[in-house]
Image: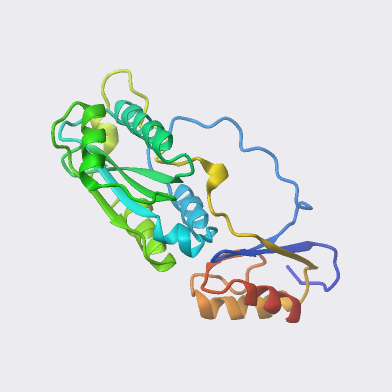
Length: 255
């Protein structure tokens, strides 16, 4: 399609945290709902993208970074996913009673032996002894010494690395959860979620709009230098995970 400067098609950029999203709003920016969600059987690439975008949109303060942890929760027994999630949500309720401002996100994953386990990134936890975590989780799942791992968050790069490696990996376990569904189960349901969303350290977004024009190709050529997965000749938006998203507002206006 030929690009006509000033044609009236809006292009929007959002920049905040470590996330840049550029969208060509062909429909004028209005989007209909996606309909009723079906039974979730797998962690899709679209779901992975949404999780990575959430992580990149965060901008925790130095204090929040110093009081954040990575947490892994596993059971010795191989449980159905729905029951493992009940245990997880019980654990989160207990945690929030102890740390009311704690917040973050979780990811359901499967070990090769078929056991579901959870990876969590949690902010606003000033101190949590590993033995206390293990005792609390063990009491919930009915096991004496279930496996738990807790590690301090140190940098934003670390958060993104952990999210990509553990929370957002697709198909790396070699485990097909559908094979292990018991009679009557329809699937594991959602593979990730947020808790205490209101307390999440979401970065302030900067927004800007322009009409689609020849400048858009210039912007995409710059973006390709950041990530070569972008198709420079297609009239579609893109998403970038960057160190300084503010500079992309400047690129957007200057192209």
